[in-house]
Image (cartoon, rainbow, N blue to C red; front, side):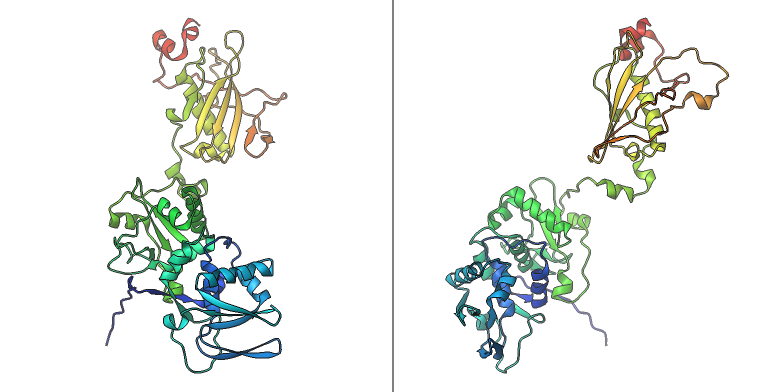
Length: 444
C-alpha cells in the first residue's frame, strides 16, 4: 500500500522544539557576536544542558544528584559557554536570569561550581522517571515562546539573540500563513497571516536602528543563514531560514525562489544590481555591447575644434582597442567615459583627458588623448591602417590600486587616430558642424 506524507507546522503551538546539536553549533561559531542585553542566547544554552531525568555527576571528588531541569558545572565551563573573560561576568548573567524568574542557581565548593535549575522545566518538558545521563549534544527540548518575547524586550539584542529569535518564530507549511509552503518563513504571530515585516518594526523589537537591522540581516544572508526577500515601496520584507528543514525535520532544504514568492504575494520584488563577479559568469554576448553608446560618453567642457560626433566616434575606437589590451571595463555597458580638455586647440594640438570609470568602483583608468587633424592622408595606405589607434605596448604603470595611467613613450610615436573614413552620418555642412563642434571648427 502506498502512502503520502504531508508535513505541517502549527503556529498556535505555545512551544517550539530546539535541538541540542544546533545550540552546540552556535557555541562553536565565533563569527556571530553574543554581546547584548536580552540574555536569550545564554538562557537557551542553560536549557540545552538541563537534565530530562534524574542522574548523578561527579565533580570535585563528590557525587551530586541532579533532578530534571538541573545541571552542575564549573565556573570555567560557564565562562566558555557565555564567552566571558572573568568569572563575575558569568555570575552576573546568572543573577539577571534569576531576577527574571528564568532560573535558580547556587555556588558550591568555594564558588568553583555552579548548580542551576530551569524554572517550570517540568511544565514545558516531560520529566522522565528513570535515571539515565542526559546527552548534551543530541536530542531536543521544548522552549516556551512566551519566554522569548520576555527576554527580547529586556534590552538590545545581540546577533546571536536575533538569529535565535528568527529561528524560534519560523513557520513551515502552515495554511494560515502565506508563502509558508515555499519554505520556513519567519512569522511573529500578529494574527494577520502574512509574514511581511519592515526593518523599522524589527528595529523596535530588537532595540536597534533601522540601518543596523539592515546591516545585520545582510550579514546573516552573506553567511548563508537566512534568505531575505525585499519588495519595492513600503510593502516590507520576508525572511526565510536556511538549513531549517535539515535540522528540525531531517529532510532536504528547499531553494528559495524570490520571483516565485513575489508572484504569490503579487508584489514587485526588489532585485539589487549584479556585482561584477556575477556578471562574469553570464555569457559574454549578454553584457558586451557592440559599440559604446552616446549615453556612456560625457564631455565636461566643449572642445571647439572637434565636433562631439567625431569625439564619440573616436571614443568607440579607443574603447575597442583598450578591450583588446585587456581592460575588461570596456566590456561593461554601464562604464562611463568622461572627457575634459587639457589644452586650448587654438594655438596647439588639442590634448584631452579621458577617464574610464567603472560603475562598481572596481577600477578607474585615466588616459591622455592627442587629436591631430590630418586631412592629407597618403592614398597608398591601407584601409585597415587608417582606423587603427596606436598605443605603446609597455605595461600601464599603476598608482595605488584603482588608477592606471598610460603614458606615451619618448622613443615611440604618439597615439594617432585616423578619421579619413568617418561614417556617413557625420555632419558635413558648416551649420551642423558649428552647432556640434563650435564656431572655431566651422571657420577652420
